[in-house]
Structure formats: structure tokens, C-alpha cells
Amino acid sequence: MQPRHVRGAGMTATLVLGVTAAGEQHHGQSAGAGRGHHHAAEACTAEFEQVIATGRGFGMAFAADQNGYPGPLHVLELRERLKLTADQVAKMEALMRGMFDESRPKSARLLAAEAKLRRLFADGKADDGMVRAAVADVERARSDVRLVHLLAHLRTRDLLTEEQRRAYHEARWGASSGPSTPHSN
Figure 1: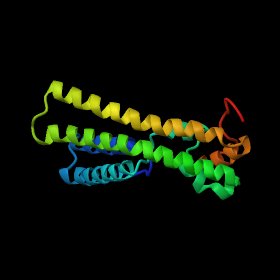
Figure 2 (figure 1 turned 60 degrees about the horizontal axis):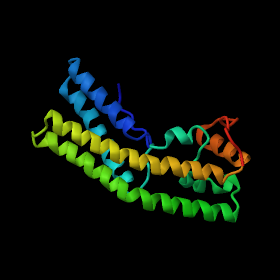
Figure 3 (figure 1 turned 90 degrees about the horizontal axis):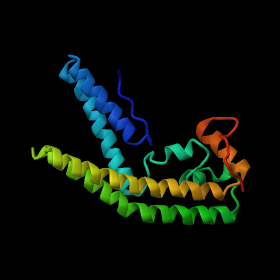
Figure 4 (figure 1 turned 180 degrees about the vertical axis):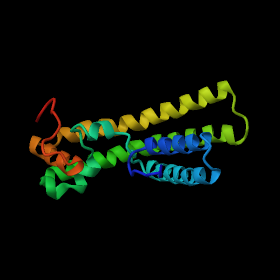
């Protein structure tokens, strides 16, 4: 199986690549074949770290986006297609700035927690208690970052009309009819 890197799919891509590489090595494929997957996983991890460091979500709000709750960054990217008003653009820009400002320090904590977990193994100091504590730190930090992005998606949706949400969904997900909309403006 060839590795595929999916931009914005978050750690899912890294995990899939890592599991694929490990599975191929486990099932007797050559170490050389696994190295290609290993390098792809490292590249995905490096991209994750770069994107997260800027305050972006790297797929953490995927569940919201694909179900009719767009994020401010992608709405701004599609501003002409969505026919945003000047007021909507100003509100989206403010929402996006606020999201990034809140996310950056939390993202820094996530990256530090991930690095600490890797160091435990790299230094040969991993044990049950240390790994459990390190993983809890990573997941707490990941949860904080994810919440920032998901809540921004809630706020973004409220700033759009039903027609704009439909146009957004079609542009991003290729659906001619948008997702079900639990509430409207």
C-alpha cells in the first residue's frame, strides 16, 4: 500500500501511515519498504507541528466543517463565492484572529507535550506511569486546542445565512445540497 498524505486530515494521516508501516514490517515486508512509510509519517508529523504552531487546527474541527459548521479561515478563502458582506468579512477576520490568538499558546503546550512523550521513548526512560501521565498531558492539550477550533466553527456558522452555508458546503465537500441544519439565522 502506498502512503498517502492528506493535507488537513490531522494526526489521522500520521497514525494511518505509522500503522501501515508497522503492519508491513510485522508481516515480513522488507525494512526498506517500511522506511518509505516511516519517512512519509515523519513528513506528516513535521507538517502537523508546523501548522499547529501557527494556531491552525490541522483537521481538529473536521467533524464540524463537514457537517455544516464552517470555520472562519475557509469562509474567508471563499468570501467571493459566498458573497460575504463587508460586515461579515470584518466579523470573520476578527473571529479568525481571536481563534489563532487563543489557539497558539495552547498549541505550543500540545507540541511540548508531544515532544515530552517522544523523549520518554527516545531516552529509554518510558515506563507505565510516565507514559500514562505523558499521554494524559498530550490529550488534555489536544482537547484544549480542538475546543478553540470547534467553538470558532460554531460562531462562524451563526454569522452566515442558510444560503451561504449551503454554498460553503458545496464548495468544500462537493455536495449539491448542504448538511442538515439544526438551526438557522
